[in-house]
Amino acid sequence: MGQAWGFGRHGGPEVQEFFDRPDPVPGRGEVLIQVDVAGVNPLDHLLRSGLVDGLDGGRAFPRVLGMEAAGTVLRLGEDVNGLEVGDAVFGFALTGGGTYAETTVLSASNTARIPEGLSATVAATLPVAGTTAVDVLDQLGLAAGATVLVNGVGGGVGLAVARLAIGRELRVIGAGSTAKREHAEAIGARFIDYTAEDVAAAARRLVPDGFDGIVDLAGGTALRTVAPLARDPRSVIAVGDMSVPDLGGRFVERRVDRENLERSARLALDGLLAPVITAVHPLSDAPAALATVERGHASGKVVIKVA
Ligand SMILES: NC(=O)c1ccc[n+]([C@@H]2O[C@H](COP(=O)([O-])OP(=O)(O)OC[C@H]3O[C@@H](n4cnc5c(N)ncnc54)[C@H](OP(=O)(O)O)[C@@H]3O)[C@@H](O)[C@H]2O)c1
Image 1 (cartoon, rainbow, N blue to C red):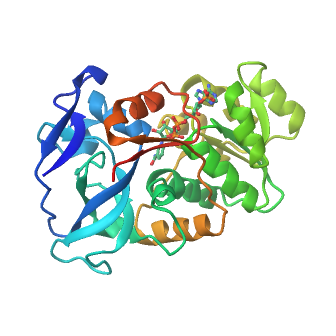
Image 2 (cartoon, rainbow, N blue to C red; image 1 turned 90 degrees about the vertical axis):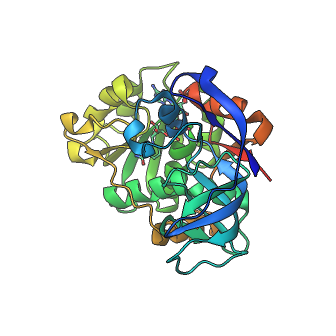
């Protein structure tokens, strides 16, 4: 039995609640873990709202929030390869266990060992933001010296993309609100404050010939403002807004397997995928952690330290 935080029905923050639940039983291809740290992501509140219920596997209520975590393996389900009881691991709760909890089940094929030297706090941020950053830059496939615009640079994915892009010797321009300047510039990106100037005009001044790639984390009008700045519309990759093909761009193709998790962990160890963790909340403070992300202007990654 352990404490968990989730929701009793779909809705706004008012449906959120703490409750006790028996340790979930790992099914075929799953592992039960003691959660050390859970990452907080926009998809968590979208699932709670019911807007993307298809991704939630029709689980019974109450449902536990959270889709990524780092922790220690307590028990193996059938047909689990490459993981042992006692391993420190990180991965996805794709089968619906929910990670804002003392224990949860992770999908073993979407879970990897935490390498020596990497903290659980950093590892817990890699399944969503870390592997997404790897995927978008792989799919852009830009050579050193190319220019990339990261729209929404100050959030969890944006800072990870910007850091990794700079490690690949790309020239990075990031757009965000005023408070994000410090984070973006600290990792070596040029910054455009969309609250203080016209993003498209400022970006054209910096890169008059157009961008070789655009990574969009903001979506909506903000995506439509920057998309024409790309030299080739196919080099606009959106991570959150699935309407991007209407603009000639692409929605990111995600790889959430163990191999990509291991690759993200190696990049994090090498300092090339250094997530900027701006808030660590105890489980009792999970409502504040999710509220920060739900307001839509989070800085870097917010995590919940459970253990
Ligand atoms: N497809 C996938 O597998 C996948 C994976 C990860 C994330 N996502 C999606 O990708 C999006 C970003 O995720 P995230 O984890 O980075 O979210 P996040 O941490 O909440 O960051 C979003 C950032 O966008 C900025 N922003 C908001 N409006 C903006 C605008 N008009 N122009 C520029 N920046 C703006 C926000 O701060 P400021 O406005 O203060 O600058 C914030 O820093 C979300 O929609 C998420 O659901 C999808």
